[in-house]
Structures are given as structure tokens and as C-alpha cells.
Image (cartoon, rainbow, N blue to C red; front, side):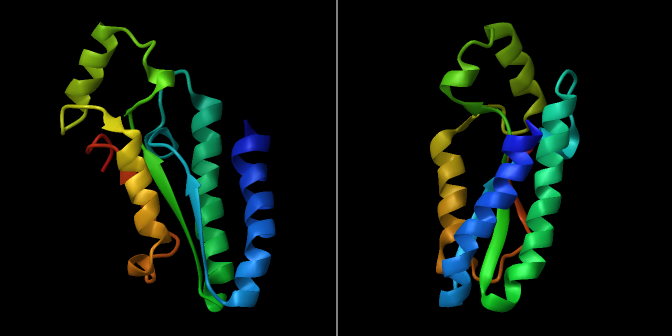
Length: 138
């Protein structure tokens, strides 16, 4: 988990940033998780790597800001995907009770957050965590 979620992000950002630094413009967006901020039973290692990724985001954001390269993260909550389709209806009902919006999110909503962070409209956002979690963690 650490190699993929943390080291992979650092190596990828380093490689991607080279042409961005030369162009003096770029956007790097990491995908973390709500559990990286709030933790979760049975997900200690995963939560730790996603929390570490937020530290990576903030540090690299400071390093690259002078070259007009922004670095942000999106932290999705419970999202309706193939991975979550195996969850029982009882568990889905329990989750919907702890999500203030009362529903799961969609992949399109997470993608929209990424599109925003990649846009010129987000040019003053760097080192930020955009939480796409329906209020599950605020």
C-alpha cells in the first residue's frame, strides 16, 4: 500500500512536474480518501497511506508553487463503483445514515472535482483537499 499510494505518487509527481516546471504551468491532482482524514476500523494501513498522501500533497504544493504548478488532492467518501457493489444492503443503509446528504457519491462527482482542480478557475488552489464525501467528514 505504501509503495503504491505514497511512493508512487511522489515518483509520478516528480516525473510529471518536469515539463510543467519548464512551461511554468501545471496541475497535479492526487486521489486520497475520506479515511485518510477520519480513519476507519479495519483500514489502518490504507488510512495511514492516504493520510500520508495528504502530507505529500501539501509539501509538493509548496515546492512547486513558484513555478505556477498547483498540487491538490481529492478525498472521496463512499462512492458507488464496482468495488462497492458487493456491500450488503444493510451496510449501505447504515452508511447512508452517517452521510449527511443521505446517499453515496458517483464517479462523475469525483471526476468533476478533478476537472475543477485541473481548470484555470482553480489557479489559486494549491495544497488543498477537496472532499467529495457528502458531508461524511467535514
